[in-house]
Length: 117
Image (cartoon, rainbow, N blue to C red; front, side):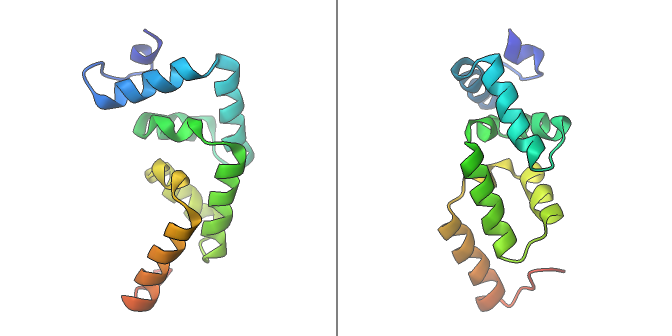
């Protein structure tokens, strides 16, 4: 019922994913996860928007989220660009730093794409 009230359609895979996350964590744990994102500059609305796109975004630890941010910032992305990427594609938080570095290197060095437009 809680997941339906959040706006998920019970006929979709996203509903099942959200249900798994909500069942896995207590309300307090979910609030703590939201607080982790808030410390990194995301609003509560951002966090719930990301949750609706990719429910597993609330399963990452603070360390995992921070490491992901450090990886993107270390590659030359700004904090605003990182926030924009995560809001648009929240699953990028779960990518390994090695994979992000390899793919960015391929695009920038091999394909000659500028890191910034």
